[in-house]
Length: 186
Image: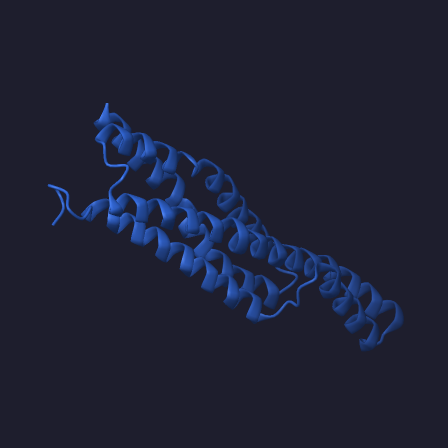
């Protein structure tokens, strides 16, 4: 039964955590491109897809610690320090994803969508009134309604939080492979 749980645990980690780490890493550069060109529908669609991948696979990712716990119980290693550290780091990684990465992705996605919506409004306002002031006001209003300035700093912060999330998962993976004190570890 131990091998069965272990296989399911490893498969769940690959299938659930892998897509989140890749999609989350691709989101900040995609957001920078989309913010730089508000009229680029493809960039906005790419961001929506990356965010959806992160949300869906984050939900599926709950299987990883559940199956890991079942595996640890069947192996009798629940009190081992490496496993406790792995569980703590997994909890921190989940908190980083849920509290820092996903909400910032949503904010940036809203800013991109508001920018895409204002692009047409800006053109209409510029055509009707033929002033740059109105176009600037409309664009500034869209950024204000999203609550985040469409600037590169937001994407840099998101990239930092994504890097922390990925580093935590890499550390958990190393602990799972090396397992200090195990007979299979180095």
